[in-house]
Image 1 (cartoon, rainbow, N blue to C red):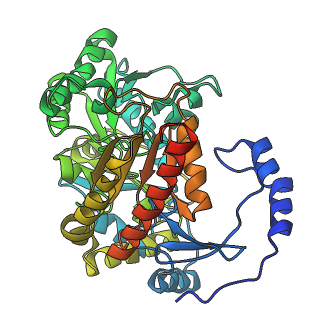
Image 2: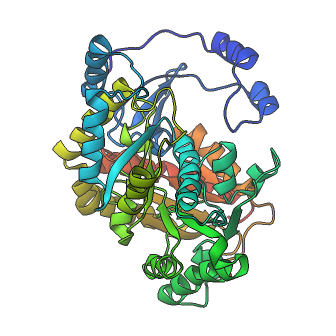
Length: 459
């Protein structure tokens, strides 16, 4: 049990935070007006705030605390490494044992053919690295016109200038004059919105062929790569039909473009397999990973690099002018190694596939009897509850996002963390969540969604 519980004066920390702390993805004026919630400790699937409220974390931090909070093994791994070698860089032809061991372990657990790891500190940095690698690869291949990377509407790949350009988020593009040149976006495989009159197989093929149309529009000799999350998490948990990725792979291979599977959210057991690539039989050339790599206990990410790209870099590339001070940080790597050991030792991936994942899906689907629930989508321990004005006709609310915000606030008031994406409530609890905690999550979600239905006049 986590015994750390400092007494904190909420008002003092709210004032200090408002005066000095600029939060990510935040309306600063609204936050200063409303005040922050000060989180003081965590254990298992729950967090506590400075007012003593016990909150069920249905988002595993931010899609990442796969092994749950309060794992002494991870704290011990960090302490041991801090005392032995707290830091050294990976420049100057040097390495450290945890980084080398982690690279080997990742080659073991990731899909076949991804035998090389380039370390960074976040999913955004990993995807920034992806852009550098893709363009460097095609330059080495003597095809410098291959610059354009195709991604999807509602795709999320990070918040650096390059990774935002990969994103398909129009609100993010509105700040900073983005996307940068060389990025193109196609429709996502969002069947609830776009494919009401098609079978899943038909829709999956039709959605995938948007990629082929884009390649012809841009010019096959100008397209470098296609990037996709196996499941679009921050885009609203958009789960593609099983016909989608086989067709995507056919198209990538036919036109010779690189295939990138962004596993920052889906990786390390979230889908009921080690990676979303395993769930959809994707064979990528490049695969960014983060979040579940250390269960959020340390900042770390990596790009897993397949032989097609790695061989070119090694044999033809010379020096690759890219990297970070903390690439392969020994403490982060040591924690990530122990995190993977926990997932293996406790058979958490198998548990998601055969036990808690099916239970979670069944319980979350019980919310479909609420009139504003248009669809419930799940795979493994990732789920979405789509809120709509008219379920029969799949009619969305006019002010997209307003209803989701109302529901999110009801969740917070009821000590449940669920995230609102537009008017879709998304959830991705720790992989250690119990049956009773799933029941707690769904009961609190039911109360919040029912209250929301009353607020918007549907009940």
